[in-house]
View 1 (cartoon, one colour):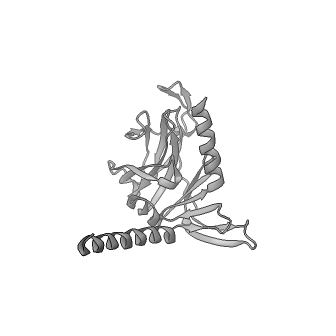
View 2 (cartoon, helix red, strand yellow):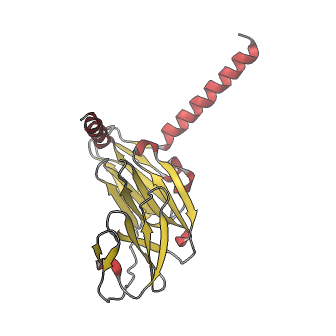
View 3 (cartoon, rainbow, N blue to C red):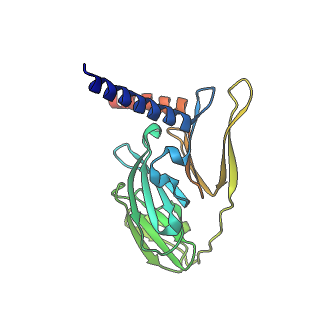
Length: 233
């Protein structure tokens, strides 16, 4: 093996080691080996953008997606969070610019109700194609949050105007209590919205600093075993 090849291999090994080290240092692991905190910088670049609202949706193929409102309603980002250890950006698309909005509630199995914070407008996010959702704005004076679904194609609503109530930002501390002494792993500032995937035990926290993910490794492991058993039947 000549010196040029040896040098190239050496440089490659150093770079690979540096990448692995930086990844390991970026994520916060508890001493109990149960909790992992992934901050925005540990996630796909789009997760670093501030957001106002988020929700989870699972499709019929066994995948779970996280939908995040960003840039005061100017952008919608979709992340594949089926495997919390390998969160991937699926879609980041500009929207019509109606302003900041909140995801309110599911409408049937394949749609999500959206409220705009300014103005008398609502929207429906069509999730029949989970990776390519369709955003449809509705001009209405009716509050659809209490709507009853009529199958997958209709709603039954009462004439009640929508009133926006601002979410209160809170600081969250992630604390490991399984170690010999309780240890604070991380503080997540000014969280306005959070959601938890009970199947994998993953909690998603959203605020002005972007997305933070708190993982529970034992729940993830149990879920993977369950999925393998289901596939074997």
